[in-house]
Length: 254
Image 1 (cartoon, one colour):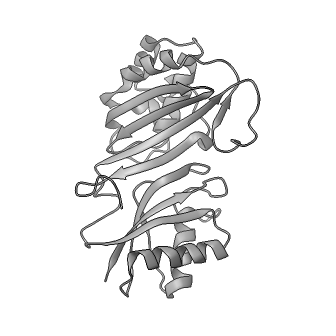
Image 2 (cartoon, rainbow, N blue to C red):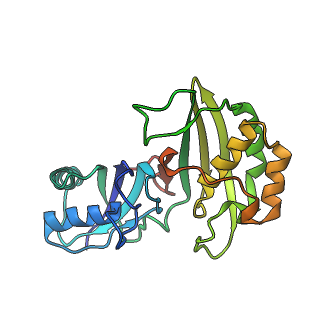
């Protein structure tokens, strides 16, 4: 049975998240419906990572097994046609055939996320639901300094949801950079895997550092507390983007 790797982009605003759920429309469910409409096959699509309600993606990767062989561009175009007819806010950017040993989730070696903050007094019009609006002035340099205390291998209990299902809170954070261009503050994070709400917890805590309420030492103390109650507020989902997934033989993606 041929296996296909899909590169998927979506606006997470109307969805309950990536994962198929009973309480609303999901990205996974919409893709599976598109496959059913196209091929008549009921499939289970596996994604490289779950995203929560309202979280966006420019580089989610998924895989699906189909009965017949497809040329990648033809499968991409056909799926996009069915997604469009259904009014979904999802695009299949690329589709390629891969060996059946490829697994979108378990073959991944790195995941890259972006959190966007628009830091200005005026509320958002064009960027509404695309970034976190923070009207109070933030010091991106102080945020970056604090962020470096979190890089490396740590127990991130303080920065994960109480509903996180991961067996261990220990993760190795390869990168957590904060930069500013005009009103836009970007937080970029890279690791092999992340805990539930980890990046949004980082963003909420770093905002406090940007406001001058917490120092880099305070952020390190939050990490060392290994206590969810020590963390800053969880940032809203609309600022978070799943950017890219790296694989051993194809780091650049499909």
